[in-house]
Image 1 (spheres, rainbow, N blue to C red):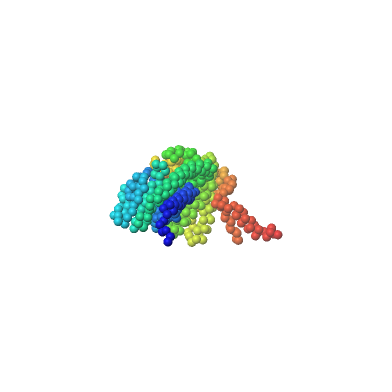
Image 2: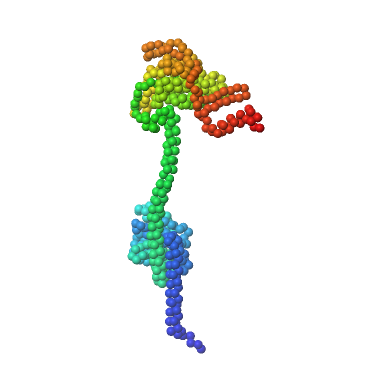
Amino acid sequence: MPNETADPDHLQLDELKKRLDRKTKEVEIIQQVSSQINATLDLENIAKAMLSLMDEYFGFKYTMILLLDEDEEALSVLATHGYEDEGLGAKVKVGMGVIGMVAKRRKLMRMANLGQQRAYMQTIRQQVTQITDTELGDEVPLPGLKDVESQVAIPMMLEDELVGVFSVESLEFNIFDKGDELLIGILANQAAIALQHARLFQREQQRLEELNEAHRELADLNANLEQKVEERTAELLELSAKLAKYFSPQVYDSIFSGKLDVTIQTQRKPLTVFFSDLQGFTELTERLEPEVLTELLTHYLTEMSKVAIRWGGTIDKFIGDAILVFFGDPVTKGSREDAVACVSMAVEMLERLDSLRSFWRERGVARPLNVRIGIHTGVCTVGNFGSEDRLDYTVIGNGVNLASRLESNADLNQILISEDTYLLVKKDIRCEKREVISVKGVSHPVQTYQVVELINTPAHKDAMLEHAIPGLSLALDPFGLEDHDAARRLLSAALKRLNPKSEE
């Protein structure tokens, strides 16, 4: 009968073999874990690799790693494994609950039979709520098992410095032994080293990125300085274009060039003043719908403004359908040249008004548009008038009143000028002597003249060219023409149609 009693030496040998196998396995595990967690400098990847290996080698299904915040007052969840809710970013205050006490004492904490200590666990589950009532504010809920039976929390140390806490939970009863805890402690410290290196690397990368970003911004600033200046200039030009609509071009240029201070200041100087008013406009307001009336008035004032700008007039203001323009400030070419330009402008306005009548007649405005024009040359007060907060660049004086009275005494579509203006323009503009009028504020009678036609004044290069014969209608506005190449092609095509032989 074989001896059933085991040989003590054989049993001792088996035990030594088991211990050796375990140590060998532990060394392999340490090597595997160390190899994988040191293969990267990404904090989350290190933590996830650690938790995954803990599951692979020890069957730890529910684990998490928390890192100590820089202020060392709380720990934040870096990675979790096995929980439905990852809870990344959830915080645990140092000294609160199992994890918080491990962080505070820097010692492993092992809990078992937690099913009998549910009241204690309820305190743990309220960690985040309690933190919310202190100074951490609203945080992400901390992951955890509802029916946990066992928990081990291990400090992750780098020499004497706490890096974080490694936590394991289980639904089974007391599954952790001393050997596992020792090995897990070694692995936790290995992870602490890797995490600290990764954190330092991350901080250096962040600083390097901030430095590189500063260098890039500086390089971009240097490389694109001209572009940024151009963009800013374009913005200012756009704003200036909007502001320009509120000023006459000459006033606008004088303000933005610095020649004209935006302060209350006036001066007395010779000006040629133009005043016009539509006849029968009040009756039109009663007949036309407001929308049609607005469109008509806008069209009229726009076309008259274009003519005034082409001849260099300073548009003072629009008073309903009346227009006040003056020549001689802020830019002057001399009293004679200013007067000739003003009268020439008035002549072109009458010509332009004739085409406007046809335009509006085709759109149902049967009543013709007629205008009266008065022009006077004399010394006026011109400049900025108003308050310290709002200024109006305008002209005042008897010269303005006289231009207005000349306009009211003019016949329909007639330009009536004073003798002062006539003496300046008589070599360039043919006029007819009219009646003498008395003007309030002027001690002597005023001799008037009617403008007939231009004599020596060539047509302005930007003047409107308009003519119509049977079968051909031509209207050329050089000032408003934007695509000159297209205009040339159109005129060339028209000439070929008129001279078919040129195509052969």
